[in-house]
Amino acid sequence: MITLIIGMAILTFFTRALFILANDKLRLSKNVTIALSYTPPVVLTVIVVTTMKSIAQSDGSLLELFVSFSSLLVAALIVYRFRSLFMAISVSLIYYLIFKVLVI
Image (cartoon, rainbow, N blue to C red; front, side, top):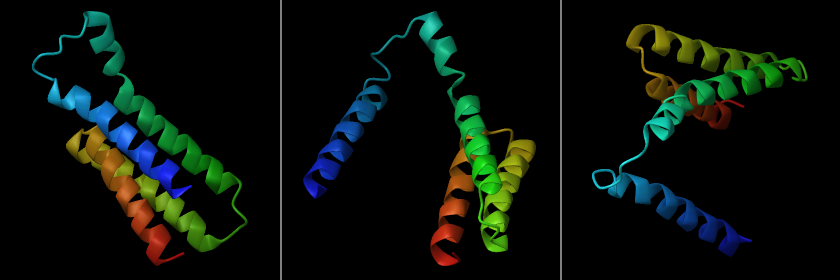
């Protein structure tokens, strides 16, 4: 099982690193560039929807609701203040994970 996880991590790393390393040499078509521009809003939407779903299906734990709702609030404040979806996604996920590990 550990071998499978490590293998998938290596595969994921190289498939993503390929696009980063070949950035200067890789020319994407206009349609692909337009499609990729929708990625950050879609990811943020998925985070919001799954968080709202976990809040709705919560067992009533007030602490769990606080962590879920506050991570949404952090993301919303970052988008409002910095207008950066990437920063909002990154910071709100880190915030959620830290609270999930340390508090719950």
